[in-house]
Image (cartoon, rainbow, N blue to C red; front, side, top):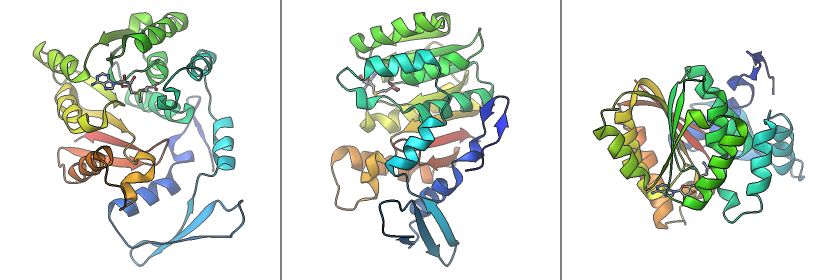
Length: 272
Ligand SMILES: C[S@@+](CC[C@H](N)C(=O)[O-])C[C@H]1O[C@@H](n2cnc3c(N)ncnc32)[C@H](O)[C@@H]1O
């Protein structure tokens, strides 16, 4: 892991590439041979060989590696407090991880985004990470159907002094996005993050594609779905719908895509 610092942030290139290669390989359905480099519980690298790609060392994220990664995340104190409060709540496993939130915030900064959308706020961890890096005149439309968790999120937007940058919308996200389009807001957003109902991904994506400008970025969480998408024995409805969404994106010429193995897997789509 060779990190370099750009404008006070770890650059994207510092820890993603090896893991990205795995995703690319899987997406292309190539027959990679994967072998761990040693058999102890310290084994962290897998050798992937394929005639088309050569031999690559791929890092597998063991608890030890992930702990190390987390010690290299810059997490603002207010986000840590929110994470600790959420840990005591029902559904806390839904919250994005600190490394994921840091990546989202960095994408927003790289893009110079001013207008953002989040679908699926829960108690606000990812939305707060984004709001913290938005410029003072920026806006994040935060869509959440659960009133109770949205109240927690709002309390933290206040505490962090970013409430003026967050337009919290209580209700079904598809309804909110549709009304934004009806309101003439098409092509006016720079960035969107989707982290809600898996079976709605295609619908959210189609609505967001109309709301986000050309050159904007849409990030979709959980596209590896705890690895279930790669397991042929798993055929429940959520897994199947994520698989079919992933397949559809592969063929979708309206966007450039990148599947990243961070957290539970994210797809980053940039409009062409
Ligand atoms: C995985 S959690 C979001 C986690 C959040 N991004 C974070 O970092 O804490 C998903 C959230 O989406 C919300 N949700 C699910 N379906 C929804 C819908 N149709 N409309 C709006 N919110 C929805 C759930 O209530 C839940 O709070």
